[in-house]
Amino acid sequence: MIDTAAGMRATELGEAEFMYQMFATADDASRAALGMAQARIGGGEVTVMADDPTGGFWSRAIGLGITEPVTGAVLDQVLDFARDHRAPSVVFQLAPAAEGDWEALLSARGATPSATWVKFAAPATLDPAVTSDLRVDLVADADHDEFARVMCVGFGMPLDSPLPGWFRGVPGQAAAGFRAYGAWQGDVLVATATLFAAHGIATLAGAATLPEYRRLGAQSALMARRIRDAAALGCQWVTSETGAETAESPNPSLHNMRRIGLTELYERRNWVWRPSSA
Image (cartoon, rainbow, N blue to C red; front, side, top):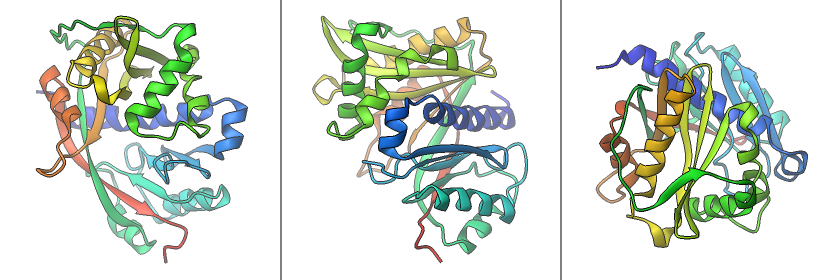
């Protein structure tokens, strides 16, 4: 058993810092083309992508209610920042136990409940036993373009957008806490993943597999490698998240995380605000 409160703090703050640094370390061309901005507000992180080719995936508020209560004033700061930077929407991702009457406060500002994510955590001492015929390693300089392409294709994000240019810079941000990995079948990069480590928390993020190479165990192999590396980096926690599933919409990532030994902490409901909200 793990300390649920400590696990919640680690997974929420780890994800929030990952998102903040994804934006903060973006190159100037990507920031301009995508309309990127980020801020630290109310103990959490807010990211805005005004010209988001996905339609709203990247504009989020994460980590609110963990180190200080969620108040109306904090939410108004977030929304003012979103408006100032032309956010098409903001997805508020707050843990169920976040401090403050935040559901009522969000509802009063026109936000509405949406999809549900599942949050996972485990001590970094977790040592998963995973075998694979794929070669898993850090992404080399020569593979940055292919890393970006696999990320986009695996997530169904448009290649004919500024997103690949942004993604290709991630492997070069080791100083900020990022490590980029690939899984190869022969000479073909079939899957990618990112590890972000900061403040003793390792976040498993950005895992994508090309559709024609799924069910080969790439994501489990990438998780196992990142967990081992997180321990070597001195992290105390390994955290991750993925979408909840239904009978009509199964999520293999959810089962991979359970099988590898991560502890399922809670489901977290997204709340979506749009500028047209009352």
